[in-house]
Image (cartoon, rainbow, N blue to C red; front, top):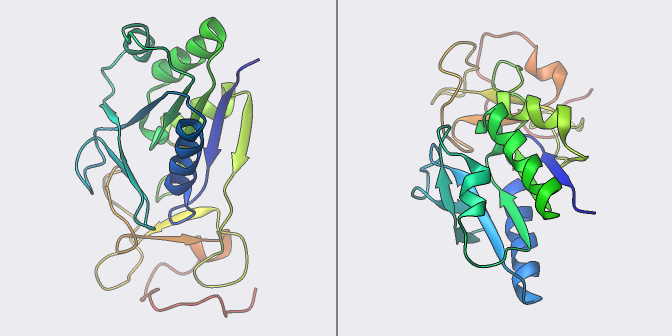
Length: 202
């Protein structure tokens, strides 16, 4: 039976690269995939899934108004799997629509995304996926400042100073976010946090 997957991790944990590798494997085996990504992510152009390793693929850009069950039902060609990048930006309704695709069409849906925002709060899409996904998988990476597992996303300014306030959605990469452990996420808010390495003691 097909399943709804939530594959989550911090920034810089290679989530998109894993998605693109899975997509490549499906295609290499003669199967067809439907790639979806948030229209909010325009770092490499809207409707593009890209990894820091340089891999890219075109995808269907979606926003919070799209009915994903209707979108899937309108596709003429058969689809063997749906892969969703930036799934934290899904609405709860869209997560339910994806689960309906899994249950009604027996099509696996794999959602890749962040769990929490820069304030440590669950994204709405991630919250819904944690609640109803059949299978959860954490993509692990190390804290930027020690050898603990990174579980949080720290937003920093151009000088490497930790930011505590701002809009929840701010698209950015290595220049804006750092993967960190809980200790360093909740550490002293003042001062620069840039220039760290996995060398500080736990």
